[in-house]
Length: 484
Image (cartoon, rainbow, N blue to C red; front, side):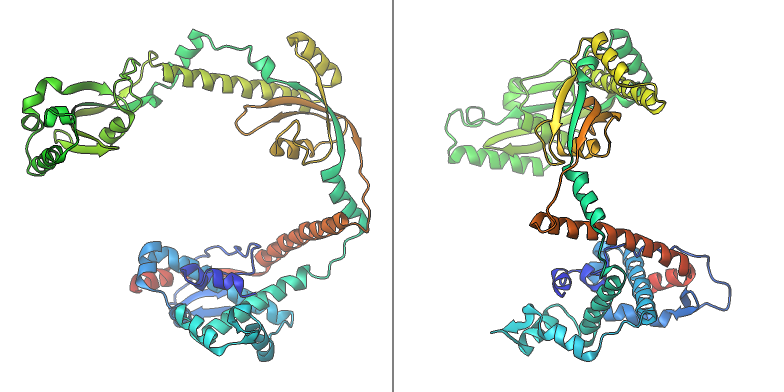
């Protein structure tokens, strides 16, 4: 019970999170601004009016600190607290309607039996008080939060508890995931891979989307500060590192790149307009630039100002001379590969859509599947799937889709990135049997109950939406935010 509170006890979320209710009590919307005469009323829940003083008292009990407010943002914190406050109010109304109560004795039993406060198997007042001090809780506030959590749990149990589902629902739940399915399928990629975008298609796509192919290019120069350059020796000795320190100081003192490298001008490397992929505008790849060095140079924000760069015992002085966003040309092979890949995806989308349209209009059956196989000289494969976890042929996500269809149905099966595409027909199904006394059956009883209770909770959320009108006085709320 208290573990959910304790997990968040050091954070702002601990003070406002409604622990038990994972179902959506996100049911309220901002209503119209109240009419005049209600200047101090912050919100109305049906006929219940809540003034700003009551809400301020609620905020004060939360005991926010300035760092939390600054980190999360004042407006966002107020909105979160108000949402939580409204939820608590509605739950209080609901629990009162249903006659759900928590006596002082019941609350005491919850606290003294919490493992976190036990020492040698007995409740420790000292551990309890240390917990309150550490987490900046006043005892009444913490105990109220525990009571709220318990009441919320009882409210949900009221609606979802005690449900005993009939056997056919459990059996159906088991069947949905353990039914044996025999399928015929065509790997559509073997058909789609025969399509190769033409140069005309590539150019047309490029011209239509030219504005999207801009990339940052930089012109710069650099000098690698090797021991041979600085000390005319090969060793990284003390004299070498003194020279490096001197160069760093020169940069800090505002000396120019040319003055720093004046003795080694002939060894300076100049690079004219290259992108972060080491290619110039014409797509020529410049292999000689170190990848890490280029990344460091592209992180330089100031132009015409030398920068000292170091990594992995490599040292450089570099300067960015110019930078501009330039449109890539089709000479850039990476761009061309990207366009080809996009055209192939577009083709797959269109072809899949054509098949789906025929299937939807009942114009594609087993006969058409056979014709598609012969026309494109691709095999119709067969597979036996033992259950929804049988990944011998398909990935878990594709299996979930397969198990949504029944015997005789034909459908297109694709992954999210359209890397795998199949045309599938379920040819046969065999329902599994389950022993009502087995552990597996017990697991499916629990699973079916969870699914059913989830539907109950969604229904209850609709009930809340329909029966509670929430109006927030935005003027009062903004005034509170500004004065906080």
